[in-house]
Image (cartoon, rainbow, N blue to C red; front, side):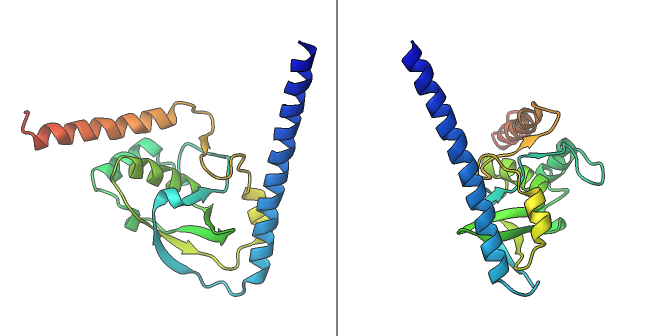
Length: 179
């Protein structure tokens, strides 16, 4: 039993150490690549939303203008709003991956829409000269940018997915003329 405790402690310490090292490597990689590049002109590219990584560990559950994620998602599903109506997400290309440095909330919605087949590509602006201090402050991801949490609302993703599923069911019923 004592050996299991020692092994468990070793594994926990090893994982924590590797996580901290990985985070330092990510920040170092950003720093090196940002210093190499010059100019502030960015190119616009079309990319799949799931090919863009989150730079933050969490986001607020509404946009800066006060609109909720649910209302925005419904507008996008009903084609009242498209990704082209919104500014492109600002990204940096670092270590071979796109990282969202501005627009993590939009990216969150785009990834949900993509998972239900509603969008394939989004516009991103590849920034070649981003404020290093701002980047370090925003780079809070704890999982390599794979996912993000909505602060204060653990059920937000579930509700958004239910909205997508409900609309998909309505479209299937209408397409098969079950009315």
